[in-house]
Length: 524
Image (cartoon, one colour):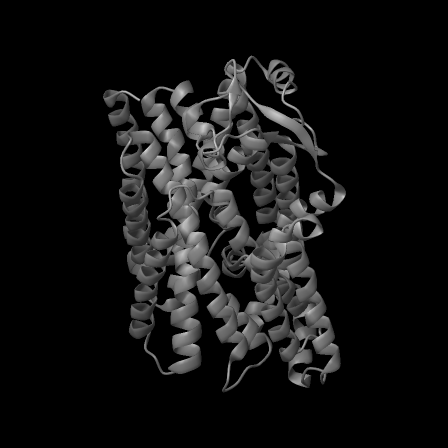
């Protein structure tokens, strides 16, 4: 990109960053009144803010870079089945979990974090293993998640301005850390609403102009049919690569081998991404923080509509990119393919407009990483420091520990993101599986099965979280049936552990069962 164009893009993006920091400053005083305001905004979110901030914080840079990159690299199947699973999971989560969790979090002694809810739901007293284990898992998986966001930011600025990836990644991380420190959950939620709007507009703008540049949908699909398996729901394209891992080309067209099969087990594995929603703290907290339970119905409709449009726009951007850029060195690897949204924006729009559109990627990065940092800090400050070790901690001490944790998790995320060849999709898929398998089954059973015991809850957490590591690192490399996405087997085994251990032990206390029935009967 010429220097003048780079400056114009930079102006647009700096203006966006300045606006986000202003939001943080605006909410700083209110956020710092107490830890409840800082961590869940005093339960004051309206349906639009709750819905849009939940989806924006959930999708991250994965939506604008990771998912289009998968579609560009290997065609429709992997990306589309993932999108279908996520769309279904979004709807079911808002439909089944949202209202029950909102009511139960208040009934369970006003729980304001997910580990806090688990602990209070099962009436932990002196020792709090459930609280400590769940808080530790939040730290582990959110550090990975934060790293994926920093990778996205680094790739974005490095691609745009030709500057050093590591320097750009660290600069982006510093901006996110700064405004999260300032404004807490309210700043995060209101900025995430704006970022959600920017993300959807950016996706639709790039898709519309990209399809026009490709000659329309008809011409685009006709072109893509020349790549074996690229448009199949039951097959997957296999790019031919050289010794360095870059896709080869003949006569300017990319080389593909025969399409690989994409069977029912693989489809179920890919769609199991939707199971992850039951355990995503950044989404679950929006259910807790909404001002009225009755407003969750409208929020569900908003969130589901946004999610469906955004996911399928992202998939089709990847397909469009393969027509517009059939083969280019910048996109000739799985990691490089994740820049297809950036290249399309640079090609199709005036630099000032391209800067605004690519602020959509920045919006995705910031809307997710601020959520991850804030929830990780709450896990240490509220759940471990105050609830488990220093119950008489003052609000000032809690906030101090929280901010120290923000810095620590940011540093770990930066270390994870140092490798510029990291594939965003792969990093996100591992953290998503971790939360989905560890927290998802326990959230569901805690809300809907009265017989769930404290021991069963611990067994589910450890089984789900541990199996994600075991399956990913030990079993998956064996291939075959072991090659399925680790979330599916880990989720199912965690459910089994909760049921078996709960049934083998004593029934929950009368107080726990009465509280469960009171929440179940509530219609507020």
